[in-house]
Image (cartoon, rainbow, N blue to C red; front, side, top):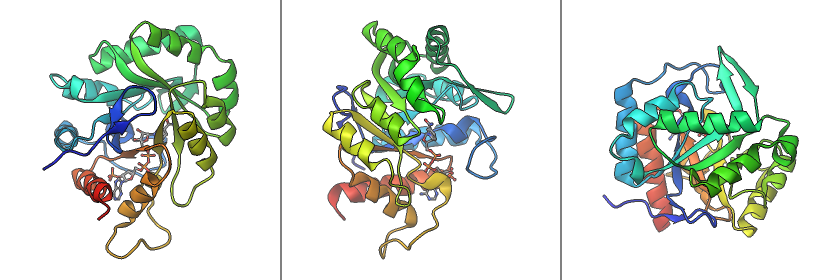
Length: 268
Ligand SMILES: NC(=O)c1ccc[n+]([C@@H]2O[C@H](COP(=O)([O-])OP(=O)(O)OC[C@H]3O[C@@H](n4cnc5c(N)ncnc54)[C@H](OP(=O)(O)O)[C@@H]3O)[C@@H](O)[C@H]2O)c1
């Protein structure tokens, strides 16, 4: 079985397969838009990681706000951390079913240190600002982004990024960091200007919500394609070789998404 081919992630010097793995459901099942679900067993997470590795899917997206997803991932990555690009976040603090945000310098430094410890590594390939709805002020004015650039200069982070919410926030992120993460799917295209601007600026692009957090309703896909494949392949048509961070706790869904990436690569 051949590996998914990789593309440069903007100008970061990193190379990523077009399909990444989102892990929010690995460690948290409250306060999400995914409907009710049970947290996966460790054996399921191991199977997902094994299948991702076997397929050449190398970018893993996680965050301190994803419950115990970082701890889980850290344990499962023992002995194979180098084979993956680890992207985490700073700013959202999730505890006792509530989120709050802290983009202070002290919290940013502490949060990155805690992510490194939980993920059992001494560097992160990417750290993104985990923005709230009011993202423009955070991106422009809070100290967090500057701290992340300093941590990059110190060798703890390879790429600095922003996971934005609004179009204005996405635009504010262009030129201020190495990687932008925005929501996009076939029924939600308002961030396409951000994607075009990021591609033109040579930034890496990560896409969230391509599978609409699991709600795949909408116009029927082309004959022979599942709704998921239709959505994934539409995303890969966007400029800048975006990496689709598809979240899943289902090995069958992961296999379907990898198969879609393989077919997209050869235009089948
Ligand atoms: N602010 C932020 O930075 C931010 C916000 C949201 C998300 N994210 C990141 O992006 C990732 C993805 O976001 P998301 O989970 O909201 O959206 P998503 O990837 O659009 O949707 C994930 C949902 O789609 C389902 N799914 C996956 N593959 C499928 C398939 N082939 N067929 C049918 N359903 C399928 C999954 O269910 P199963 O588990 O059953 O497969 C899961 O419930 C997250 O895990 C997280 O890493 C970041």
